[in-house]
Image 1: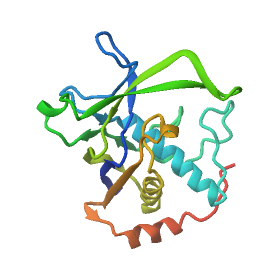
Image 2: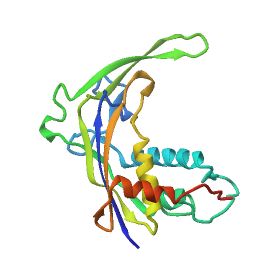
Image 3: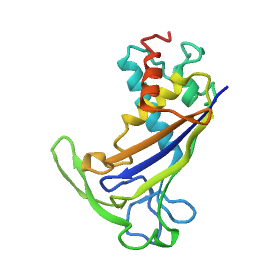
Image 4: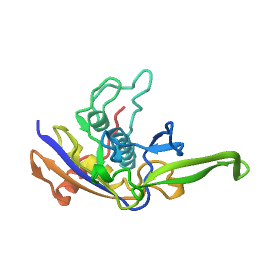
Length: 218
């Protein structure tokens, strides 16, 4: 079975908020996620979840029926591109999704200018006004930071079309993290696909993607 490797670089065009809960000793209610050296990261779990959503939306646009992995009872246990790539409660994913780590010197990671604390408020959707006593402070990674991994997605697949589906999902992913309605998270992305250690061109991936066609998984 051929090896798949995707090298991925995500560049923040606007401030980025990939957050976790705040902690004692900080002003922010929501902090950005960091690795053990203090560098901001985009976790592999977010990479996987974001690409799964984009891949499902793409397949639906082609007329595919995408069963929910949590349907009880499940409609079918037959292999589908989504189950192969991302797994299900009954099926282990064929791929590993790694953290994308900010390309910054760890000694610089916590210095002023790398991150900012932004105020935000909770809006009452019915009245369209700010809620009282609901001021939130959100830490963000600044625009211009680069997040990358040469082993962002790795594994073994039996069909290049499935790798092409990941490629399409990546091309559809231009917003990352939270607070996107506030203008955060706009990013540019560069992905290089390696299939059995051979770099794939845009033309090759587009041709492989066409073989998916329309289908139903009922």
